[in-house]
Length: 126
Image (cartoon, rainbow, N blue to C red; front, side, top):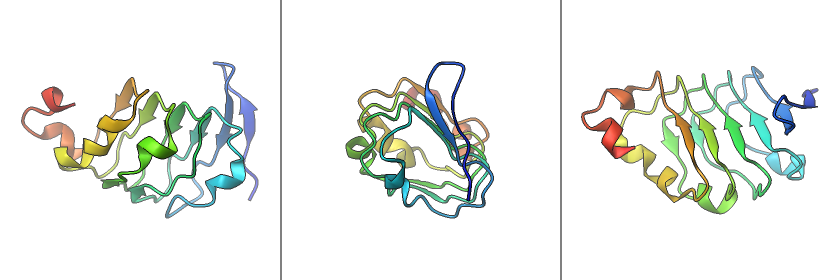
């Protein structure tokens, strides 16, 4: 499988793993932590977990998947992640977002088109 790699408009190294019907996050260690942005949008990923240590990763685009669960170990694997785009997934409960609180650099989080946004006090919780 060929995956486009390029420098995006923000001058960040990006790899596009979009629309490959990927069912789970695995083998990202083969990227050798060379990318600032990883685009995993439009796949079939169900759980946001199983990342290797990616110190360089700043932006994760993972919209239009089937994600319903966020792994507890993200803080250890993605210490410099500041942007997480999770639009149009299957996140339902506010408690499912708790592991994101431990991401020290997280500044931008997109959850539109997830049922969790319809929960009472969603804005206060996030």
